Image (cartoon, rainbow, N blue to C red):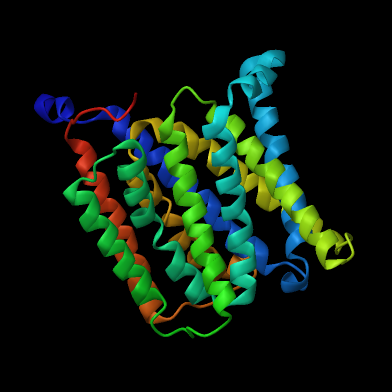
Length: 305
């Protein structure tokens, strides 16, 4: 027993569970969007309020954590923080536009590419090597997502599919940026992402010359969605120092599995019964994450810098 405990990488396990629960928090976004009124008509307005919510919650968190001096973090944000904020804002917007322009199956399939994109960018940008067991887990998870959508329509807008891939790329690159320079305040990067998301949304609203007003329930839903996204990003950022970018992106795929679960549970009001293949595919993704997590039992070189 003592030998087993000595072989456990406790820091890695901490990071594993932080990122795992971040994915579960994000998964509630699926059921929140389902309650929107005319979701495909109010994407930029919804994203504006959600961006404001994310920035406000992160600033509140920093104030509680660091007091009145929290604003000094913005002086240290640097190029990596600004670039990471733009990439994360792109991921925010790409997901909402994609899922309202094409089928959920296509969007999910695009999101499954996140770990692979993060692995490639992480290797070339900051020299992070990919463990063989992580590669196997990524492939298993990708197969799991493919099984989940096998009975769904793969039609829809080509632009929607492209935006789904853009969302996956944005989140993958953001994940690499928070590993790029550890001294960069990670939470401030998320604040910037929320601000950029709101600014981009305002530009779209003005460009399309649509009304800024939306149904009141959509405002409340966007704020609620923002609180889940912000809370998940806090956990994700805390776990980022314990594992490479590709592994972070892999664990975030629990968002896909959790999202299907929440819209299935009747008590939550949606009761979308998944197909048999969706259940099987979700189980495969979960097994891939568990298989990957077993690697945390053995100590290895730390990934913190």
